[in-house]
Image (cartoon, rainbow, N blue to C red; front, side):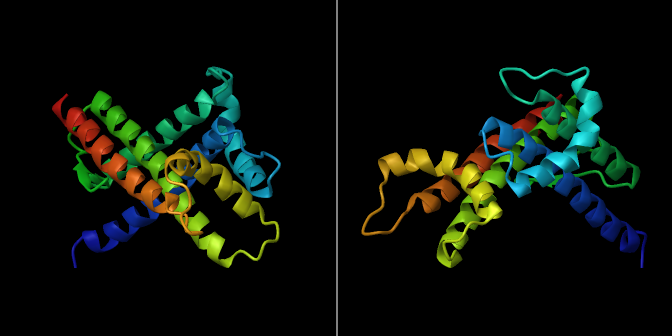
Length: 202
């Protein structure tokens, strides 16, 4: 057994832990962007989990247009730290939208561009998961209040609402989640690979 026997599981753990926290930071940004209920218990958990590293950043990075720019900056910093750790472990590429991004052989500017591509990919994934989960919850929800359902609704409706204006429910069947899912998957396939390609050419 070679060194990859230990390295691969470590990379999996590192990627998973970093990505989970990055997702929380981006969720915080999205909750403010979409004006979701910040008193929702799930929202409060996201706020408490991300406030410590955001406090010092906000001293230097103010909001802009009512948006939490410090949260986006924090997500970018954490992704770059993840890349540095992955590079130090001898891994030279990561997978983004079915494209292999060479983080081990590019300069700082290219690394930042790849990090931006990962942030965009995560944004799309959050919307995608929200739409899929909202469909599942619509099948199993008993009608009682659930803070998770409220949060999922806040994240999925901005995607599905425009589609519902053009494709209303037919015979009680709402097709907007299907078209939203397809649209988000196609957007990810069209948006992320060109950004990674540009980064590799710098």
